[in-house]
Length: 102
Image (tube, rainbow, N blue to C red):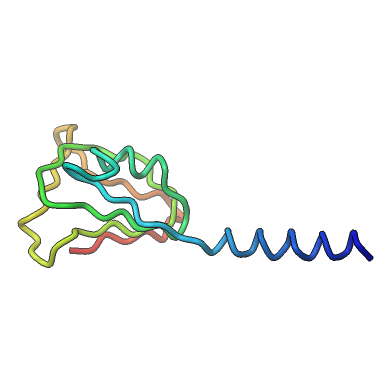
């Protein structure tokens, strides 16, 4: 009986951590300097919040189901440019349910 309780408790703890999503903040004075670094630490369901600034980056393969948003309602506060001429800043892979907002 004691083993069954431990198994149930372990299953509940796992289910709680599986639905836990986090916000990863990118920008000057934030926890991440680059969108790429935040993406590397992201998991499905997480949100990457980009604070005002100019970001020259290239995320070649986005597989995680994440949301990427600007921290303000003004789209001109966050400028994204590709670090590879002629390539997009973000390249989403098949099966990804990621979103980019504002």
